[in-house]
Image (tube, rainbow, N blue to C red):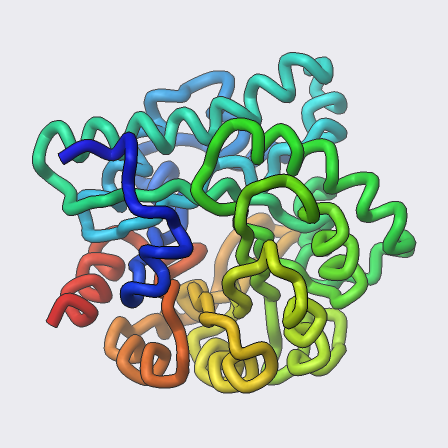
Length: 308
């Protein structure tokens, strides 16, 4: 089966739930790669691209239909701080899409994944570039216009690289969502918008219903929801997202552990359970997967439940 001409992402989404991958960083770390650098997994785009391909392929082979690229923390500003110029940074952003495509090609050629397989180009929030945990707080002190100017250049590069969808993810703040929704207009690639949430509020404290509603009339956005929150927070958010916008819901929580930005470590007890997927899909979820600390085994269990 070829992955070169799959049905459009929107058409696949309309046909039924699609399984997303899990945490790229934990898969890379489990393979022995050090991600303590401020660039996180984006460092490997330049230094060890084969490792990124292998991590994506592990999720495709576990049953994921969509791989999210290693560009979450990849920004022109972040690369510049490491002495990487704009042209090289743009090349690394494009490479993030190419590596996920290569993983899909390898898995399909080997017959170890069921397609069509898709690529979502990740665009994390401004706080991800700061690498200080502020993507879980928002309220950076920047205006919507300033945030739009930050996001638009890399979204242009990612869109031009030909992903199936843009993943505007882990957004902590309704103001940043406004900026992203402006920045994504006219790029010619559909997008999903997912917030990091606490209860029924964004991490910055706004009601999720108000945050989701921002995307209701934006044609580029084909799904709204949450990611990198606890599974319990995901349970609450699915219903809010579905009734607020009428769009398909995207949901991919983390393991339920919490990130200690000072110690740069996860703490707490995992709570991700693939059995939750039935409630999520019943509530309107059509893109379902895991985020940080959710690995291929959990994705395989989730895919098995959806297939059943």
